[in-house]
Length: 302
Image (cartoon, rainbow, N blue to C red; front, side, top):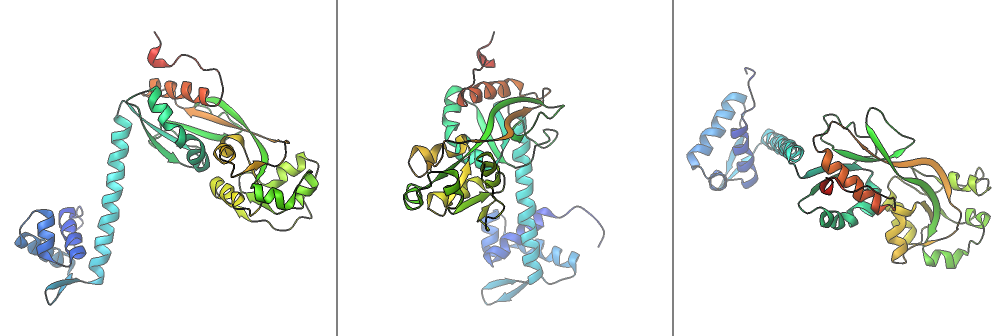
């Protein structure tokens, strides 16, 4: 078969017919005639040299290859839709694409979005979670929050808060194990998290951790804190992630000792971004949320 662009219209017809097991129902969905559906399927069969549907009583049974084509069409259509949304979002003057780590997005930023939209009516935010630093160059991201040593030239960066870790556990865990010293805590069940293992805090507390056995390890901040709130063990966290758990009593702080990680949360953006006004407004609002003195937002500046 000669190379040519994929017949998306025909594949859309095939997908609808495959899903409904009926040319008539597919025609009704696509608002075309039964004959148009039948002809589109027949042309595909001629092009591919394969039978795509078999009549089974009142139903049209798709062949295995038909199901493969239908699934490929759905995936391609979804990919195109995401690309169109990305372009529309990037070109919208009041839309900001924000990339940040998953735990920080779910536990800290998402609950604060109503405050952001109250401060800047009309602003829409597209949150994307990613552990790695966004390139901010052709990836559709306008501004990112990242943990690390920073900064990352040539991007512009602004420090937000230092990542200091402290242990938390459920009230029932504390009542059961009563860890009143770092050594007692080290002997209790502990939960590790990939980004900040217990060795960091234990070293700061002067407790050797080499002889300790295996510990359950989580790749996600919220999952680790959820497990701790259920009494599985004590977990390490930082103030911004732990805030909702501490506020409603699901977790309590086990020790006043915090361990510095020499990592910091940074706001990262490109100075040549055409949405620089929105980024500066977001920065001003964000600094207020983390307790830093911010400048006047760009919207109200002279």
